[in-house]
Image 1 (spheres, rainbow over the protein chains, first blue to last red):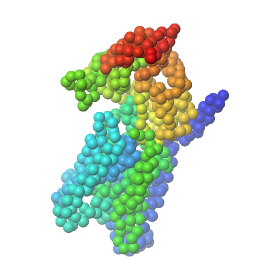
Image 2 (tube, rainbow over the protein chains, first blue to last red):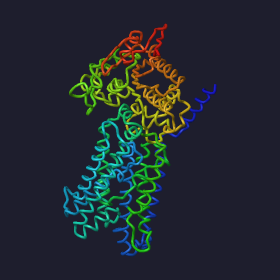
Image 3 (cartoon, rainbow over the protein chains, first blue to last red):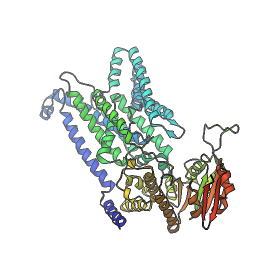
Image 4 (spheres, rainbow over the protein chains, first blue to last red):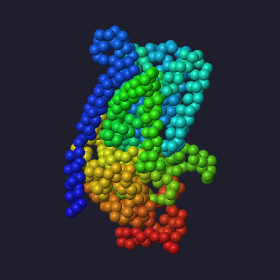
Length: 348
Length: 266
């Protein structure tokens, strides 16, 4: 008797449960509203206070707004969304809650590539793309495949090995970048230092527009793998027997991640831990379904970095902090917290 | 009607040296097997005898070194993965999920081969998932988080996922290893019922020889990657054959009506 009534309540609960599509819509709506609000708030936060009237009347304020403030906030949005989206994708792909572009060394590889390009004075473009972008992409790509090659022994992906190889890539890359910086002229050296910490300084809207043109298609392509990543996050063999072409999906996610992180690093440097914190926040708030976590991370990541940068701009009475310092200070403890929580996970 | 056919399949894991001679160690060597519709086949053998490797080849997870696996007469690798996933479901020995997925998410994932790209599960998919969960004896776990479950409970959830896939062929790699007596019996009843009701075929790896004797049509016994015996339970479950298969001289088997009793003589 009790068994039947139990089953009965289960059926009602399931039919009463909101379908996933509705949950996705609600999630995206909430996160979009939060992003838009943060975006407008961030536009008017900074060392130079701006108000809307001044932007229309005062040419200095207008220049400040359109040449510096707006591009910077937009860049925070693009980079924050990018790193978080890739973080969520890599966590699913590697089935590792501690994976993100920074901890896996992908950002480090991109940074090294960009530094080499900068030290060699490659201001040239190839088919309209600055070589720094291509070098950063190549560096991120090398790091991704290196991490994978080290971590994948046979068919078993060792979670610890993955993060350790990321640490090694980061250390080697940091050493190489420091060497390049030491040998480079003072001007390049300063730009490399800014990259190492991660910062969103940008002048004018043109570079932001270029970034968007590369990133948006890559985001969409990566989001198209949401379901495959959802199944991969559960179990690789299960995903393969549920119709996921695992090899093709992995390759696509690697390439897209390297592309997105390469562009983000070339513009903003190695901003750490964004891709780690944000997907976990989305999971806690909206559930584990990767079809919701991926787009959610894109939106919340954009919000997070826009707000972190607003904090970086206004935290000091004189001068500004690089945003990477803020995300690092927030991300380090979050990483340790996740490491402790990891005991609850059923892996290993 | 033959559903799945393995023709002389062999597999060697890369980088595993062969102690017996030069070249690679073959995990599975020239195994042939025909799986009929609505049939139940047990795969038995000692640890490391190639059972999981064989079933992973049948599932399309490993590509045979030589030989081939045909599904409805067509080589497995020529099937579109999603269409293949509607025919064959596979339950691995262990599922290591790193994220705290709700049980329903795991079971619903079994529906994905039936759902068009970029679509979400429909109401009927939820109903099928709940049915599967109940059939697996795990209806009470519907509201739980998978990382908080015991090994046996997780096996029931993963079985439910495979059932939700509504395949024609179910490949099970030791599905009952962590199940208690009650759930072991429930598993066998469920499998027998699905075979009757839906014509489901089952290939199941097990060390539980007691189960194989009463329910299965056929037993495939592997020894060092090769077929040691293939036949009806009463043909395979014999003291001398079992002693050879497991390398254990004291194993005894005795037929008792429809059952076979297997024990180790002290």
